[in-house]
Length: 200
Image 1 (cartoon, one colour):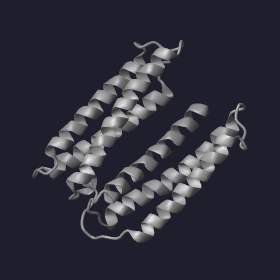
Image 2 (spheres, helix red, strand yellow):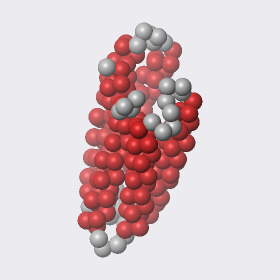
Image 3 (spheres, rainbow, N blue to C red):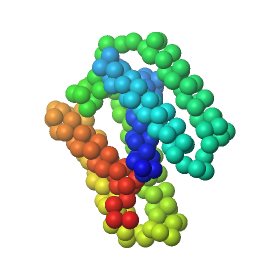
């Protein structure tokens, strides 16, 4: 039960990160339209509710945590503040010009730069801290099947991302879209592998 709750909580947090990346690109001057903002806002809606519901469920499911622990109350306050700020941003943003890349969109180099740097930092972070965690815990060995699978999926996702970067701006938009969605599925598979740890 704990593993599933943690998995759903982290997927919800991942959706929040998607929204932050998309709105960060807009804040840095990327062109946008209602379709892109719709995707970002729905990711926030689902991710926000998911982090709240599964986060509280996790806190109530584990004996070492109490709902009134300081860090849990602080997380709830920050969640409310972030949601309120997001609604303020939604009311102030407007535009008609670009569409989300994976939906067949035009976009700006600035937005792509933000997305690529997020992948660089997030990708290196998952690799470095994931290996560190695996070496730090006695119950895991670096050559466990699930760790090798996670590393393989990480390299596949990184390679797909580089292929997308090379093709954006060209005429073959269908391959960009296909590669993006394949990478998205691989990343979800990576998250599932890291949380479920098959064979561990």
